[in-house]
Length: 83
Image 1 (cartoon, helix red, strand yellow):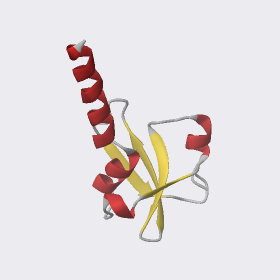
Image 2: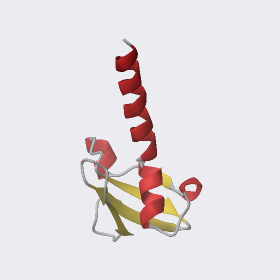
Image 3: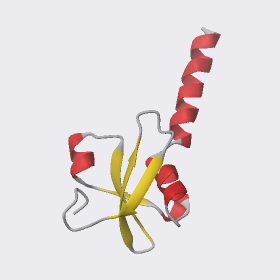
């Protein structure tokens, strides 16, 4: 029982450390508190490895791998899923 609780706690901690806001702050010049995840085609389809984020007046398209080890963000364009 204790080991199951420990495993759940570890999973939750890992998820919190790799939130879209935190990942976005690693790949942009924004702090975690400045990042706002915005509604996009990704979020409407339930995609968890790509998202759109706004910070410092700019909109970014971000993506990560399934393990959330790597993240890349680039400025959004009018033709992508963020618009």
